[in-house]
Image (cartoon, rainbow, N blue to C red; front, side):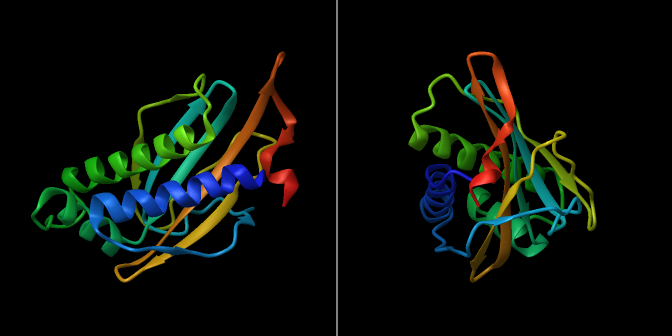
Length: 167
């Protein structure tokens, strides 16, 4: 994947967690991801369209999702409730929006985020897209970001130009 895109998502994630949650996070290397099963039981998904299109998935351990919700709302949720869904959706939106801003892709639009709950849920990317996964660690636990994007040319998305090709 284009190093500029990987860096934008890493920096956006670090900034969102530090600014919004007061939490330092570290990341591992970006790796090509062939799995269809989410790594963690709480996933925020957001679609992107325009100059680049595809999906970004932020997948959290349950503990990370509930502690992030508590930090945002000022009170701990009682399990994976609507507050957690809203918080995970908002964090996913902020991470993708921050990366978009860093990349300077003004014609790229973000969809509304969707949140999926449950261990072992499966998430598929569009045919021909091989996502990149970045693992993050924090004192609260682990989460990861899967990025499956293609760049568009004047004729639309080029499936053969999937961003994962550069790894």
